[in-house]
Amino acid sequence: MVCVVQKFGGTSVATLERIKNVADIVAGSHKKRNSVVTVISAMAGVTNKFIGYVRNMNAYEGDPEYDHVVSSGELITAGLLAIALKNLGLQAKSYSSWQVPILTDNNHGHAVIQKIDPVNLQKDMANGIIPVVCGFQGVSPENRITTLGRGGSDLTAVAVASAINADLCEIYSDVDGVYTIDPNLYHKAKRIDGINYYEMLEMASQGAKILQEQSVDYAMRNNVIIRVASSFVENAGTIISDKIQPRDFRGLAVTPSLSRIRIFHSGCEKSVADLLKQNYINAEVIKCDNPSKIDVLVDKKKSSIAINLLKNCDFIKSARQVVARPSSRINVIGSSISPAIADNLVDVLKSEKIETFAVSVYSHRVDLIVSGNKLLESIAILHKHCGLEK
Image 1: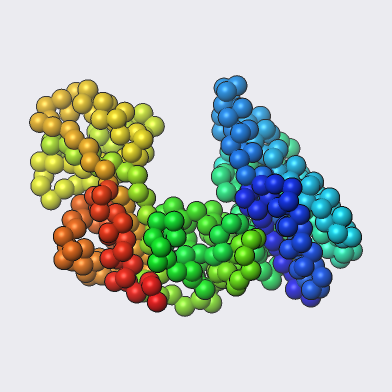
Image 2: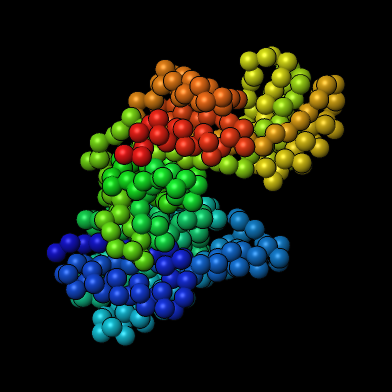
């Protein structure tokens, strides 16, 4: 008998019809003599609606009541899926986090899982009952509901799989696997059959929305094999495991909506970074080849706020000019990345008359900053050059 944890995201359970479809998938696994635990997200859009409610009432992450409200969507879908499974003639039981229990610290909004006691789940599985576990939730040492951060149901699934020694953790959504790049950005993106933990961790950390970053890290530390698949299309999906051999280039991750603010001033990098941080603006300060210039990368939505702050602060007032240009970050992910490989990628873009404004090299990725109007052209060039279309 194979033990499987199956997690279904918000789009997979967005309607009652889709919940019935999920029940069919779970029933199919159960009838193949698989021992199944299901982890469920809230219906698509529900968590965002609840976040709007609590923020309207002036409650934010860190407040236990915030977690109590925004985690309640999972209770609804867990109960509905359990009902749908019973309607198919199966035994099922819904579980909130405290009933498992999933024990966390008391960091409300971004709780860290400390321990999962698998006894209740294992008892049900031994009796042919399918546990339906609320994702995203935990319970604190003070016996209060906690939440695991956005995308936290992925982490719940991986942690439950580790606790019950499952053979496989399947993550179902509306995407049929991990792609070399977001297919919505580039039509020649290819589904990856298998990827190792390090490569997937880089892709997740750089904005690939297939899996929550913490869930990949947890899987890597506990050797949980993951399969990413679609609840709407039947195919092999993508396997994530330490058994997958690394490749020189595995994929591209993209942050498209950035503003590159150029300050014609020198010697104020730390002051700029501190000023923006104090005003809750995430920024990356980049030294230019010309010491009289500084580039600052911020989210495009925060660009005008950042520029006003910079233009009106004392240490920038003497600057000749502060200007913003639309920019994008392209992360080239692979194994054994080196400065020489980064230089080669820059040369490839340069040969096509595309300028890179900054390059950062890490062991498993290269970060390239290009002009916003050159993003799609840059993606096509790099995707082909790195052999990702094969």
